[in-house]
Length: 346
Image 1 (cartoon, rainbow, N blue to C red):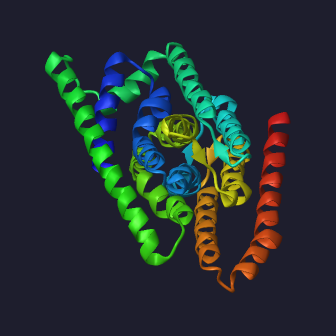
Image 2: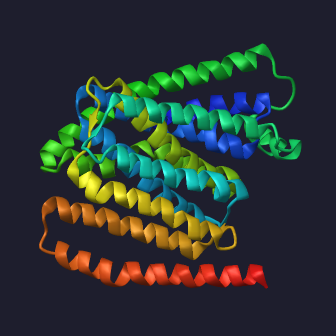
């Protein structure tokens, strides 16, 4: 599945570079959508098989994993510079679609009509980004072209090879997603763990491996627009595209578990909101902020394990986290945000 996503992203990115689409736009669309294709394949497959907990848990868990784990790891490698477009448009949009997902699921069901609305949302978003691409300077376009496109003439053979890469990648994705869903369900039964926990952890991390590879490699190479844009774009696509299409193709919509509505989807929303103060603090995700994100993801995963096992340590863990860790984190970001605003005013 991961190999299929790599072939898909490689072929699609080169074709996009041939056309002249700028790097940030490719990061938000072609790369983000391509690396989210495992989530799409797994969630649609799960929705059609009636495994709603894995379908929804995969989307919610992947969005949490993308921000806390992938951005965390990428920032730990190298501080990430955040573009103005991400701060002004894409991150607020990520927060908005997270709120919409929560509101749509409040009645315990994502209907096919609500799925249609979400799918229309991703079409409109992609169309808007396409219009934005025309405003980008050629120098920015050349940055991505040098990385993904072959130099020299773009012959019909090169175009054909990239289309073949896309076709092979899609085929591998579909087959790989079937194996992942079947294996995850069997694993949940063997371990005595709910489908929700499996979807939020193992499946979410597994389908997010292409995003890990893309963002970490981009961070190492200094292509920071792609590293951050990939995560934000993937999260938007996961909710609008993956969740929307899953609800649309499922025979009777997609049921949403109560535990998802009361905890996991709100966590996804909080994680999206948490990006705003971090992105505003000088337009850079620093290394210590990366460590903070990564640490929070470890705590979140540990909580899921304790909750699933109904462990005796769960009340103590929850109390420490809610009474000490969260308030201290909020206070720290508030101070940093106020300090940066004062500097801009001065």
